[in-house]
Image (cartoon, rainbow, N blue to C red; front, side, top):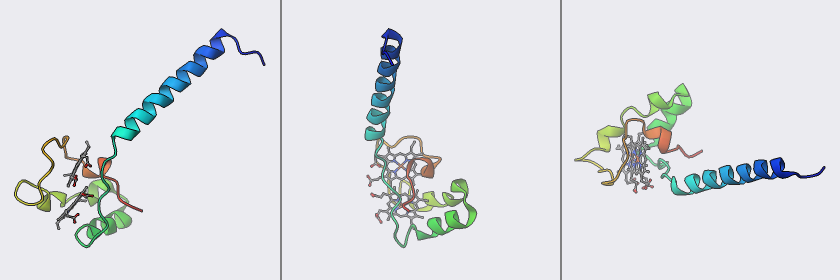
Amino acid sequence: MKIDKRDWLFIGLIVVVLGIFFAISGKEKTKFVPLDDKHKPFYDTFAQTGSKKEAEKGCETCHNEKGVPFPPNHPPKNRCLLCHKLKR
Ligand code: HEC
Ligand code: HEC
């Protein structure tokens, strides 16, 4: 197969896309939800319901201004488990 100009454009595009992909995934190293006594119930709920939306109810009973505070630059935080993955 001869590689012509169109092919090089295509290869270049793939390289750029992969580059962006790695750049983003490197930066978004969000912390995992710890697998300890405090967080175990949420793992159980998720195992039972298969629903992250169900499992993340109750996070904010501890994670709030007066309890375990968020870092000051924390992003909008209504869907904890979309960003903070559960460990497997
Ligand atoms: C019973 C209180 C409590 C509840 C409920 C709770 N957490 Fe936590 N969480 C803590 C405490 C205390 C810490 C910090 C100390 C530690 O790591 O145990 C913490 C730490 C964390 C951390 C940081 C871990 C790290 O590596 O620094 C994340 C992320 C987190 N919690 C996410 C969640 C999510 C998501 C939920 C809901 C699914 C949740 N927590 C529910 C008490 C709680
Ligand atoms: C839009 C993505 C996103 C959502 C949604 C989100 N977080 Fe975070 N969270 C982050 C990022 C990014 C950080 C800072 C980087 C890091 O240390 O994980 C962070 C940091 C934290 C930390 C501090 C970790 C440490 O010790 O440095 C805790 C605790 C935490 N989040 C809990 C929660 C809880 C509880 C919820 C739901 C109420 C939530 N987060 C929702 C992205 C998110």
